[in-house]
Length: 103
Image (cartoon, rainbow, N blue to C red):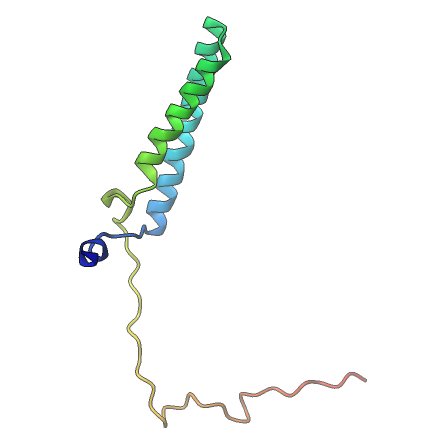
């Protein structure tokens, strides 16, 4: 049962995050303008709120799940190097700094 959930991707790349943010803000802005104009025409503020909430729901559905369009530019990480005792990564006296005394 849990193996089904582990196969679902849960990440976005940085460009995908930027795209999702732009889509979210665009839909919210458009729905707010449409809702304001429609509410002004029919003189009902409630319809303005409903339209903005509908825009929020649509933008959440489009941007919160990590759709494949948000995972097109993955980062390539360098491979991990194994640590061995003599590879020079241990601290030496040259690498450690002593605090300076102020005069």
